[in-house]
Image (tube, rainbow, N blue to C red):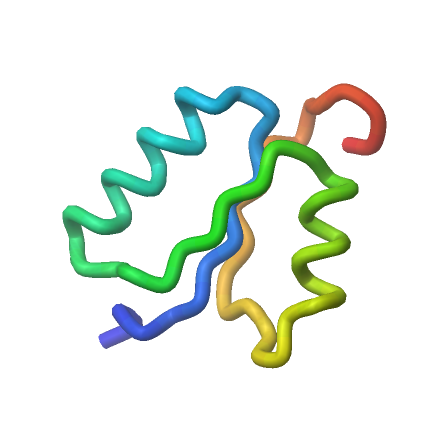
Length: 65
């Protein structure tokens, strides 16, 4: 199963980041990274030694969407 997946969650609403992370953890995913902006997402992806298997994105955010 994909529970070893490395997941990036991007949203400018902290409550949504927390809810998504809790839900994913509850169903067995544990390698979850959350960031509050597209800029932070790009930085996180650039610094990551292992690529992300899945990215969950809010498509309407301030700055870069």
